[in-house]
Image (cartoon, rainbow, N blue to C red; front, side, top):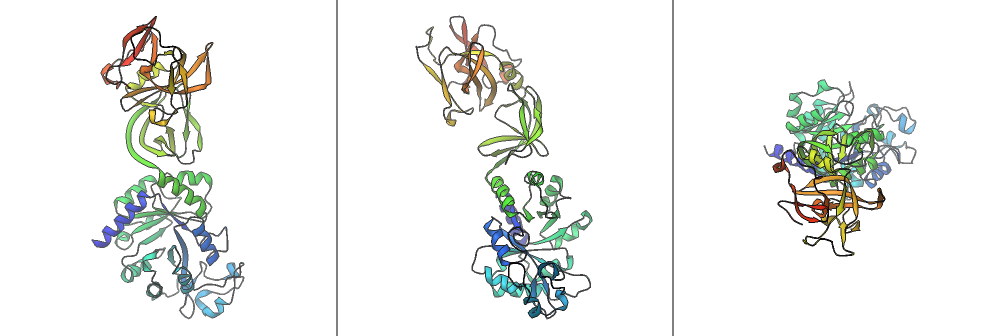
Length: 454
């Protein structure tokens, strides 16, 4: 029970802070993989952990290398399992570093910041009865047991790790769905799944089983794939591009999320862009047309703006989306020409030179984007309902043409319309600000909210 609570808290922490970035064998774009230079580069690029592979040499030394031989990294066709470590250590990678032991890596980071994700490399036909015990002993010698995680393709290795290091997280690496079974959850605390297999439904189901979800690729992540990955509620990603992953992790960390279930309508006079994710705003080829509706399942705040999730990898700006049934009445205002009437006096003309402040967003606290003089004609470009208030995004009209230099948001009750032209809602009680004629300015009837005044 104690360990289950620990893993649950880890999952909650990761879920609230973006996702964990793991540099795959360090940062192989900066230096040869599995070298201290590559590992340092990964941490410098923003990685939370560095992944490294551990296997045994002929004389039982823990060696940090991915392949069964060192040929790809050093040019020497030597198998690690059948070569003494002293021989392996004499060969160097392209940056001049020797083939490292796990003790060398742990010694390097013992007094430096950074955590490690260790993969236990279990080669078929090669006995590894004490690999996990040796790793545990090395971690204890360097006082780094609480700074590591494990992942492995080997289920027996994870079972052995559960015995020797029961409180350290353990992920099963998965490249096919049949490897994910309920039996695995007894000794694994998470799944490290191929990006080709992961789905939002899988992530949700594994989280329901108190399993962390990490994702790995064939290390060829594209920009399009990252825009998709950033939308998944994953706990971590193992990547060759830690700088890119760190950027998305930071954006997701700074974002706010909330559940939403609503039918929304574009109450503006122009199409709204549809983005792949709300973080770096890569637009898709589709838009939400004026007056078109969509079903939102979540809302995400990023960069100070809210976006509605209307499908998998589909997000629309919420600034001028209006919920039904108010949307029909709000849309009826779009495109109309109204007159600025900022005062609450019953006198006919407004004082000369009186100006009405315009705001960059549908709230007073957003600041000022400009102003318009009383009596000016404006065109309504968008309508938004915010916390019981009706806001209009307007543009000043001169000689029947809108002027872009005087654009901003204003409360509806600061505007006036000719008598009989105010749109009448079918259900006035459903509106947060049901307008009603309050007084007359010549041939104009000012629209003022029944319940709220600014």
